[in-house]
Amino acid sequence: MTLTSLNKAFVRHEQSFEIYTLQNESLEISLVPALGAKVISLLNRKTGREWMSSPRGGPRLFRNGWADDFAASTLVGWDECLPTIAPCVYKGRSVPDHLEGSGFALSVTGS
Image 1 (cartoon, one colour):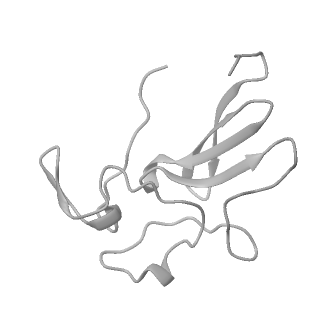
Image 2 (cartoon, one colour; image 1 turned 180 degrees about the vertical axis):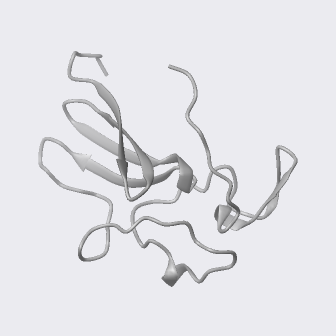
C-alpha cells in the first residue's frame, strides 16, 4: 500500500473510553485499548459498508464483570483478546479469560 496524505490517525472519547481510529482512502478501523483492543468498527470507506455488527441503537461500551455471560457483554465488534484468550499470568498479574472483569487496560505507546 502506498502512503498518501489521506492516511489519518486520531483519538476520540466516547462513553468514557478512548477510541483510536486509523484510516486511509479505502479503510477505517476503530478500536478501544481499554477493552482489550476491541475492534468496534471496520468500515469500507469506498462502499460505506460497516463490517462489525452492533446492537440496535449503536454500541454501548462497558467492561464486563468477572465471569459475565457473553450474552451480557457489549455485543459489538471483534475482541482481539489481548493479551490473552485464556486465563494466565501476564507481566506478573493474573489475567482472566478475555480480560473480563480484570481492570486490566492496554495502553497505546509510541508515535
